[in-house]
Image (tube, rainbow, N blue to C red; front, side):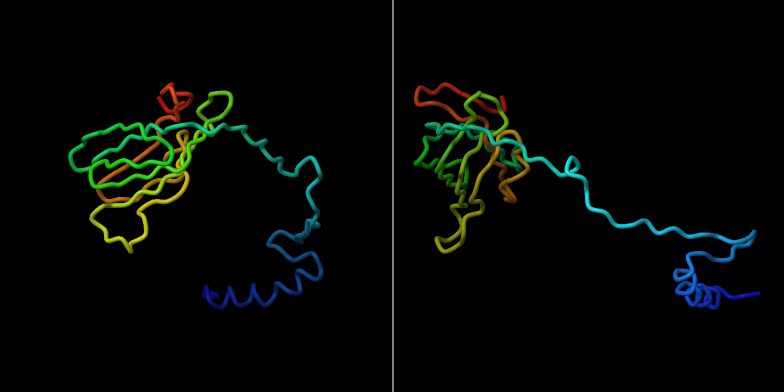
Amino acid sequence: MIRAGRFAALVLAALPAVAQQGQGEGVGGSIEFKVAPFRTPEPEQQPTLVPGVDTRTMAAAVLRQLDKMTGAIETATVAVGSSVRLGRLEIDVRACEAPESGALQGTRVWLAIRDRRDDASTPPAFAGWMFADSPALSALDHRLYDVWLIACTTAAGEAVSGSE
């Protein structure tokens, strides 16, 4: 009987010869190996880009915060260029954009979120774009709070698009 380690060594030793000849001996006769040639994708198989969404700048963002310990939910409308305190968090809204069509896809807000218990030299807990249609795509990673965008609103307070 051939032990497994010796069998593997025999197979590995025979591979270069088999690959050069393009065939090998099997239990019931000969085996022929075929190598598929490398080819580049056809032009119709190339990925296509999704067209961008035309957006407009909005006056305010509607944000919702969840306190993970108590389950309490707070909702606040924050004007672009101002900030709000929700629990221990200080949230600065720097931009809010919504699609021209009023659809949810593409509604986004640029936020900087700080925990007020952190010192001034600590970077924000979150700084960047948050998306109404995909809140988990770019989310606040905080042990006590979740914050997400509900909608962007006009100066008159009319919600143009959002997740509600």
